[in-house]
Image 1 (cartoon, rainbow, N blue to C red):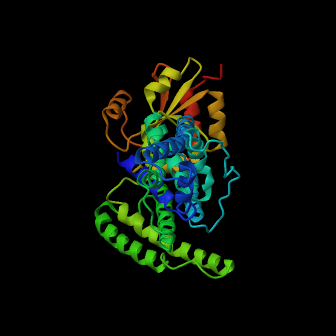
Image 2: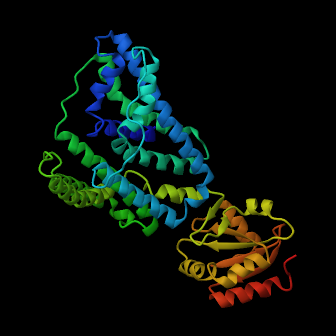
Image 3: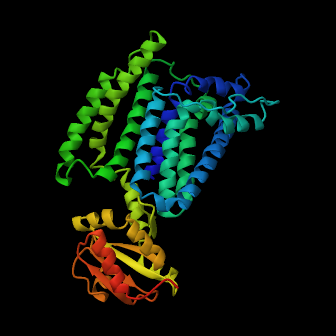
Length: 421
């Protein structure tokens, strides 16, 4: 439910952005025909308009969810996670209009009988693109989150629900004015504050993604103190960016002001990042959780690894040999060996010669499955490489740290005279 609430607020924030908010009364008047309508009719037409918006956003959410399931094995790759973080920074700059985010979608539709139900439905379907420069940054962040969570949960429902919640958020002001014929507050400097707040939220999301790659800057016992300091950093630098100052002057001066504000808002985002550490799992950690839950991953060297030994054995055939890498986050020798051995040309030739199936088992935490593996293959320490046949029978074992040449030689010796079929 928390995710749906956040998506709704992101949609509402998009609706309150500078290029959407002024269009709300105009758009509402279009499908109401500019006439005074009854409460029920206004509510009905507004609801149809929001339903049209939902069609657009839910369709895009479905595409994102499907792509997340298809490419989910890549979400553990540091380069992919880094790209996500950079993408959030770009969206933040786009939201505050430091860099352009242009779209070529049609911004107007012409339909006869605008008082009928078809007109608000079509208007709603296309409304997501009418003010795309303002709606795209936050919805782009939503789509990215949908893709990662679809890969994690292997379900389309959470993603579709989140896209629907976003559409309700952005449609809420339209429903409010259409049903109750109320006047919204006049556009003013507060729209700039909304724009700056949205940028900070996107920058913060990017920092949380980087957090997963580099490791948290704050220890577990320091998060409360960091959160308090972070809140004050956020408040101070957000106000230094002068979010309520009217935008005036030449285009060149306004661009310079936005660039200066972007620097201040990025520092504010760092404060918000610190402030949110104790209360929520890092957004970047979503990728890490996905990797832990995944059956397979593709590492930064492009190597495909099973993370479930039983699944790897099911996939293996008589011509395959399983190379099982037992490692842990706290095992420095494991990481060093990983950096040296697996990307090397000599190891790549072993992959082809022996039709190796790569399996990586995480021993960072003690689990029942890990205990059974350790007992079955008599594991005494890390790093350890196991060489198994398709039935799980031990063919060889490489124990302890070795440089690339030593490890390759030892693997060949353990496998003996077995050649490529």
